[in-house]
Image (tube, one colour):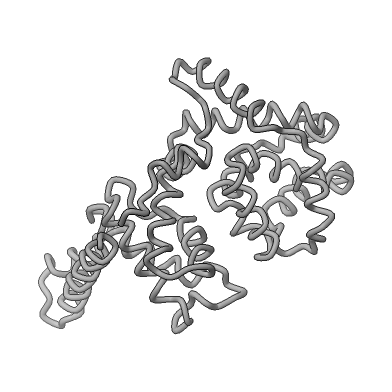
Length: 288
């Protein structure tokens, strides 16, 4: 199947990369051979992506060690990510993808994880973020801030007063569906809801996190708030209380789509309708 084809492409590229490394290590290596290995900034996308993947694997779910050197799922995670790089070389590997792939590998086999990752990343929401399309990212930030001010006006005003800006924390949350930021059991429930409801749930989840911490945040200054926002995984989180807070956030899918559409039109872009799961599966790669 196509997964095996792309995995084999990646294996051959990795072998070529190792040959360059060995050539560069020879005592009589030429300047060209050393440059072929060390000149990472001159590499084309696929080979450069393979090097970044190697660096990212040990950082993924560090507390679990499943994906670290010698871990039980290390090779599977590398295979999925490398196959995706050769499936979509125009996108390549971007930091954060390893968390998405690892969440899938904890629940399905390697081939299924590759198909699921490809489908997930090909939704409009993820391509915009991993391609670093700043127009689309700023549109999502504007939608989030609209609901932030609407749902949590006191905390919103506090953040504005202190200069706590959306770009300092939200991008990381959304790009990994909280896999990098929250405990695994909490993240799993967020994924379930995202896959069922769609993009609007991520706005609810993000605002739910803020709502659950609101009393604390309102007593803190900028530096302490930023520590909390960027180190959620280090703090105790009561799962039931957090989801009560998420349920208290009123962001329906139709309302989200309406606000997103307005923001898209304000930028002179086309439809802003967020793909629902029916649309997504209509273009899924299950036939592989």
